[in-house]
Length: 264
Image 1 (cartoon, one colour):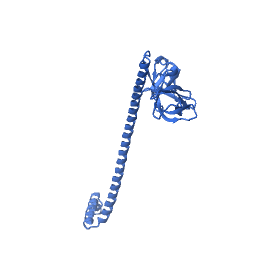
Image 2 (cartoon, rainbow, N blue to C red):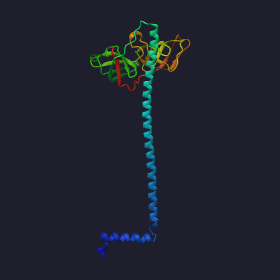
Image 3 (cartoon, helix red, strand yellow):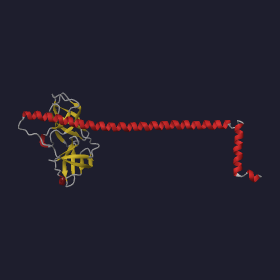
Image 4 (cartoon, one colour):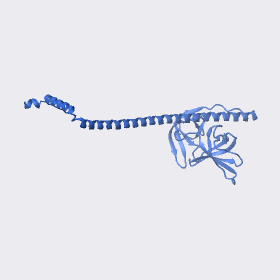
């Protein structure tokens, strides 16, 4: 009899019948309620945690979409700015050509696409190295731009397969430029790669924040009409003969990975 009672199957049946009996007498209500309460609490916490995780995931997805939209809008803004500058330059050139009938309109630029493969940034020099050189048609002093005719710099050293480009942020860089809205000329330079400014603007000229700075073609270093940037701050002292202004560069020098060399 003892062996029969200790048999697993029989023992299981006895436990089941015992639980049924205890439940029918109401003796299992308290542990059942306790277990149910614990289960409900766990389910509630799990649901709240799941809800928070879903909200966080939804917020991150929304943030990602907003960042993508912001990037797209910034790119669209750069393209529109480039088109606006080109249109203004065409209008300015046409007006000049009407006054000087013997001047021939400049021909379209021929461009050489290059990858940026190195960069040197110091208080004394700001340059990049590109993977195009003499055998690709690159020449010394050639202007270098990004998409949209945004000025980057000019070639200062060459090998057969690479070229060193002096950025407009380089302290030794000098650019003959003009304020497109007024035609006032000045000299664009950099102070240790920190600030890009246009200097030697006559004090009596009314220059404003947001005005566009383009290359004037003076000294033959750069073609006419390349976009340098926009005025971000006026620096004017009454006792000085000239005034100057800080410029926000048009080119994105932080994420510079591809450029165009203008074939001379």
